[in-house]
Image 1 (cartoon, protein in one colour):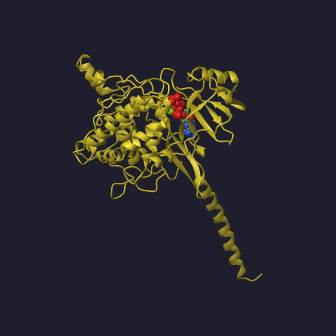
Image 2 (cartoon, rainbow, N blue to C red):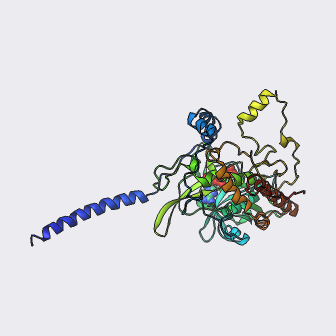
Image 3 (cartoon, rainbow, N blue to C red):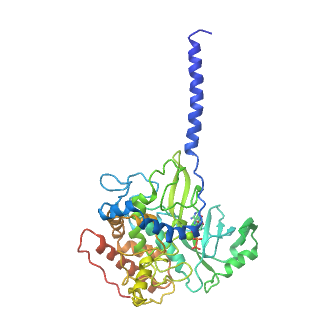
Amino acid sequence: MSRSALPNRRWIAVAVVLGTLAGTFARAATAPPKPTNLSYLYDAFDNSFPRPVARQLDPARWVRKIGHNPREAANVDENDQVRLPSTWWQPRVGFVPVTAEQMLAGPGPGHGPAPGRWQVTKAKTQGVTPGFFVKDASGKTFILKFDPPDHPEMASSADVIVSHLFWAAGYNVPDNAIVTFRAESLDVAPNASVTDASGRKQPMSREDLTRILGRVRPQPDGSYRAMSSRLLGGKNLGPFLYEGRRRDDPEDLIPHECRRELRGMWPMAAWLNHSDVRCANTLDMWVTEGGRSFVRHHLIDFGACIGSGSTAAHDYATGTEYYMDYSVATEQAVTLGLKSFAWESAVDPKLPTVGFIDADHFDPKTWRPDYPNPAFDERTDRDVRWGARIVTGFSDDMIRAAVGAGMLSDPRAADYLTGVLIQRRDLIAHAWSTAASVAVTPYHP
Ligand SMILES: Nc1ncnc2c1ncn2[C@@H]1O[C@H](COP(=O)(O)OP(=O)(O)OP(=O)(O)O)[C@@H](O)[C@H]1O
Ligand SMILES: [Mg+2]
């Protein structure tokens, strides 16, 4: 062995050790973050009580408010636009041309499970509407969710219509579609499971399936209509929060309440009366694409949008006050309950498949979800104008096409919904567009 070979061997050994360490760290950096485990009840409580109170008691916030110096979104460039690439949002309507066809094909083929026999793999245990997971003959898995008996088509159409509109607005959404099937074409998979009331997983039987379908009203021909959502690809990491960060995701560097695409989603939510816009209806997936693994952030579950409140029609007051609304409570206390509300004069369109939504009582500047959303609470004028640019970018044809995807069997329902969404879009344009002279298309059913 020559003397000069020795240092070489040493360097090789050092390189091997460093390489191994680097490999270990690289693996650590590309390992998926831990799935979130959130109590949805706690989220509702926290955002209704402690957080609003803490906000009111935050001196820094008051200094900014009095000084008209709000904290602007952190992930924007020098042109005040979302920095790209983003795993949250892509520029689509309002930024690049998007056709109705692209919108309909955007989230996926929109077919639901392939025709044939479907294997039921699991009962849906979360949430309020009945449902279960099925696998089709090609091995693709879907979650099926159903309409409340008194409002056939309502929640399923809302989920499909609004998923397309949110896709076109630039957000990541699942491939949702309306499907019909007969109970006889379902098989319960041998390893299918159902979680009982005490949270224990039990094998699922045909009786369990019959019990779930017993909560669903079949169509006149005996078939069932459902909303099918193709399971998102990748590893399920649970929901994202509308505040803070996922600290074990090295890419998640900006507090979510400071993200433009989350704050600026408020006009979309207002337009579509998305009262259920909360962390439970988001989903992070760990995906690998082009040799890179990362977290993709999705919006899911639009079953409580437009006129649908999932299990019943939306209340007239939905969108005008929080469940626990301190300003409404104060007004009521001061006026001894004598103050009347604009929504009291709302007129029910008497379209059970739509539920309740109107444009005459829609005030785009004061719209509210069911309980405060941390990102919406931080929105500034710039965030809202950014979101209004998206809403006002939707053409009448796109709105009509999205409503068509909801497959409402009553043409009056589809016409009503299209008209109301057009008018609500125009009201948003009128309220937020820099061109002050936007005309509002009156809609009279
Ligand atoms: N397309 C999907 N891909 C992967 N997981 C999904 C998908 N849709 C739903 N899920 C899972 O199922 C859970 C419940 O879904 P979803 O929010 O649509 O229903 P829900 O809130 O229980 O329904 P509802 O309250 O309307 O009955 C989600 O938290 C998510 O974990
Ligand atoms: Mg949900």
